[in-house]
Image 1 (cartoon, rainbow, N blue to C red):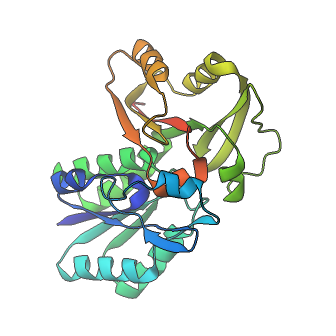
Image 2: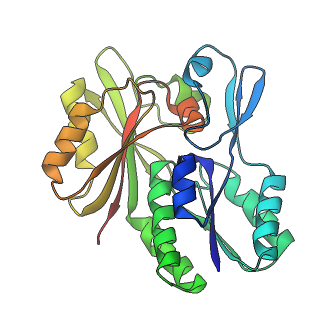
Length: 271
């Protein structure tokens, strides 16, 4: 039997993990001030955003090697073939840690670098779950995921550059947040600056221009429940009338790097 392993930036709730049935989520670690945490299912992290906004430092760290060793060891011992799909190796050492653990455990364990994070990762993991439940072989799932990950994209914007700069994930001096300017980014392995937008309408238009017409699944995510994505969702529905627009709220790990008010779009293409 095939088992799927992923990391907690996937953002599944407890119920979503249970309904998928074959998914194990390894927690990413984070620090708020002097307190250390593991990121849990999306319904189990509590009110983390006010803590993040009032504390220094706020950092994230890859899952522990021990977590991967225990997870892989238990699954292999139970007779599973393991497909492990993780956040981009350009943004975290998670893939490297998982590969080391897989070598130690042995058995059939494939490590897939998703080249994305968050809801982009969720879309790819959902594809793997569907293939496994549909009877695809271990080899075919791994092969297809390498193709599918090229069809997954994410675009996002932030209210302030401070969190993303503090995390060291961006080194483009052209990105600006001034009184009326907000940057637009795309995740393609690493975070790529796509332009500064003047005003709300221009920002939404820039983001929508990066979502292909052939998108077959779309997720709108936001940092903080109060972040307004109603107009973005309306515009997406207008341009993609056949696609259901899913809504998500970012967990603590992504929120540390984007800050309150950030929002984005993840999609997977048909072609």
